[in-house]
Length: 573
Image (cartoon, rainbow, N blue to C red; front, side):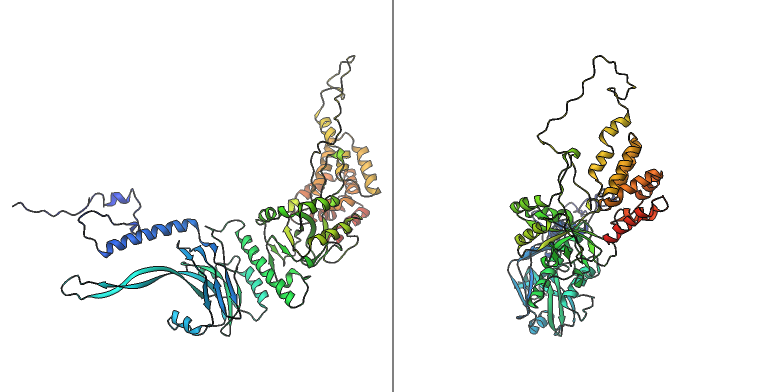
């Protein structure tokens, strides 16, 4: 009889260090190899369960975490019931939470809460709590355990593991002040926007559904938007603005309902409740009076304008404006805001044309909508055109009770005009001039077919063209323009410097711009002024006017022109 030799299973070379150098070995990603004749134990089967569980969680982590759909949370103060609607979510650990039916929890049922928490919580302390939905595994059913040897006895163990979800409360390390709930929620909007303290306390196998305040063992209020976030892989540009916008709109609805129940109007200031606003959002209609040119919602030093807009463009404007910075109502810097009045296509076509500025076809400028500037206190005259007030009154009647939309404007679009080439005016283009057959034009002759660089520039850009775009506002401006044209005709460098000056100075200062330009050219001080304007703070409204006023006396501007700049800056503030 031959000897039976026992050899170790597997290839010792494949299990050595050589495998580690060519592969990433993860013990969690180990699965059982099945073959006929093998004796399987519970450990072998559990290894496969762990493998599949880890694989599914890896996929979930790649997708991100947050609310996928549904899971709206509400609270009824009369019945003390928290109601959670069906939905799905993904936890930071990659587990899918699925709630197939409505979940009702009575916060007044202390016996049930104590039973579920092993008698640890018979009373809820005064605090702010995060309402979370958590992944749990529940052991169910009974299975008989047979003895594996003669010394063992028969027993029992649970037969099934059921995956489920449970709703719970997580105390937050945030103060609950003695304050109006609306103000508390508004402060939490700002405090939790970029804070990782509260989210770090949320278990990784759960998602946040909102924040509830409890005082005297009784729920006081629920905010279903705070701490809640949609499914996303990681924080990216615009996510904070989207979260703040969702929280702002929900809180604003509660504020309006609260003021309505208290017989209060909606002509209030945003700073009465908020300290931070999203870059785009809803504005109470009562806080805006376009007929009188008055607004009470935004701070006095904000530059607020109003204009009509098509209802079909609202969603597009919202999506384009959300990446802009949030609006800090406590800042001392001016912020450009446009309040938009949504109208149907028919109403917009009727009223928007009546608010358009006239345009000159010779300058090839397209029509531009005339934005109405709003002040915290009325400053007359408000309407530049005699018919503006009547048009805005008609727009206001058309809007009814619908709310307005505010948008933070980027600085580049603050005071720019829309320009372009007007087509199909019904006129013919001039015929090119024909050379005289009896003459032999000299290339050095200015009238020849070949032109120098300056002549070509002056045919397209000159003081007449600049004046058509930025026309003088009074007789002083017209005289200054005439003097500039006489003194600098044919001087391409002077025209380019004047064009740059007009580009760097806002249109708001047009009443003083031509006399200023004429005096700077007389003193040969325009290049120095341009150098300082290039270095100005472009994000600060009126920065060019302040720069001209501060540098004007040094560069030779007389007192009359300087007083005009000072008056324009005072009216802006």
